[in-house]
Length: 243
Image (cartoon, rainbow, N blue to C red; front, side, top):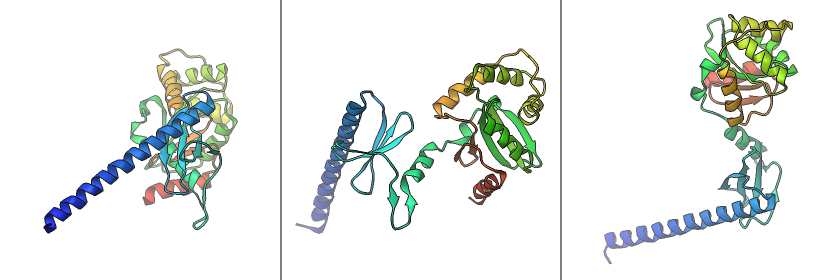
């Protein structure tokens, strides 16, 4: 057999083996999905992916939770996977990756825009006006410079959150109304306008699985859930700039 004939035969075998492996992986992923949803009793699985460690399959649930399963879907591992060599929390790193977004897709026209200094650094935040941690965050943001802040009104805590959000959105100076309330406790005056942007923010937040406020996004798409002091936020922004 000539060299070219042997090479062609080897490539053909490799292709077949690759196809078999792919089909086997797909079958295993489907088995994991089927058994997981049978255990939960609902079509709750978003995706199943084979991991490169421990023969485990990553199972992402539609509620954003990440668990693991064996190849047959006979066992569920609920917890963090730690790389003992690097001491890296593989699960948390994966959750961070899954939680990231394409920042350019955010409808910034639905947010209150504030520019501090040159505004070269960018933050988007989803906040409920009645959120205590949002008020703490506002005090931290007030002392920051060279930042553009897009605040998406995200009323999810109470009916009063919705009325406050609507009044703030309908104010002549939205930024002033927001800061007046969130920083100084000045109740926004009653106002009337098209509040479809607030409705869309709630829909968007649900799509992004935002279950608590504040939730921040940096320009590189990273998500920061909950209150963070300005010092930590400065470090995160510096990391964005360095990249």
